[in-house]
Length: 505
Image (tube, rainbow, N blue to C red; front, side, top):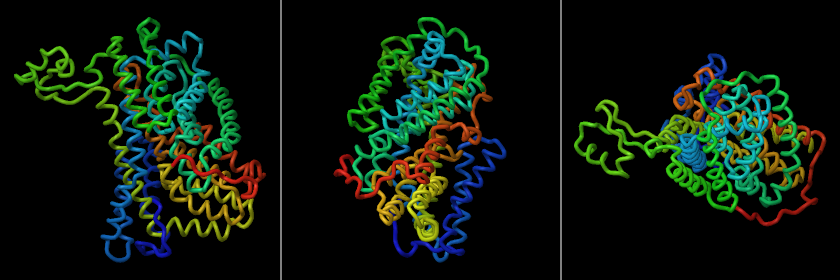
């Protein structure tokens, strides 16, 4: 995503802006599918991006092979792989905690301390923000909280759309503020600022937005609260025991904060959750991993008799063979989203290598950003524009970071300030747009809930196009930076403070 040159690598009929056709087609498809028709289908969005890439090919000047090679280059970008790995690990972790009764534990705890439907979204926002700040991945938080906390809130009577918005808001907070977040690291490194200083300097923006968001969730929660759902007996000791998985979550947070890689942190949490499930009898081994093999097989009958291995092999009718369990379903549920992200990053690569991004940003640099105030406003709106087209926030940061640095240096704006503007908007908007990676990650986890709980109906699944007004922290964060750009709140020039050496890359 960092390729730049004076001449585009691929030329289009219609000029550089025509390189935006695949992404523009996809956005239009997503608006029609999710917004107008109300179809929340990730695989449908995959089809839209595929068709968009095909349509874009007909506008290419010269050999189509160059265009095809750029698509392959985009699909192999490391930034996409980072998001995919986070989804897979977080999906397995969330599903394993889920089969261990963590949701029942949350419902029991909320009832015990009298946290009703009106306050649950606000509490969800705070807890999601805490987790995302600790582990440094908003995507992982969106997945885990949608799989675990979302159904608990719905069971208590919280509005599903508001509850989902609260989860996404917490993910925004952590993605923006966590020192171990990839967006924090990229924003600091690309603007020549140290990570510790960047995090400290953005507290005043993040906290202001968070306070407004919390109040908004309290007010909206009271106005939108419904009646509790009859989910059966969740008041016994068995339900309360599911709260033991707070230890699993704590292991992930502590390991991540100590500087371990997010894969290692979630893997340790996964190991702890499996151990707790088995040791405390919270779930059978087959609920976490099951080989459903044909009962007609002699080998299956022999394995089934073994005490340990047999617990993982479930004899079934010959036509019903499959692999199942939380480890399987937690990963498999994200396969359509993985394909979609690879294709979107490929479309963004086409736009970048075709000069589309450069044409848009050159116009902003030369014609709009003529004063410090207008320059900072351009930074905010420019990051919003790029993030609307690239749904992976880290990829959007990488694409626009050189232009933010160029524009900021032109007006001697400090690296800390540039990094904060860059990170806040890409962190926020990736969880707001219906086709955003963070939102779709949570939605993918939500689609499995009707199969997990008998009481959870399809009507409780939130359409991605309906949640955008309720991601309060995301909107307030953008508003705070627009206010800061126009008033000079928090503005620092290069001479005001020098950055330390970048401490974490």
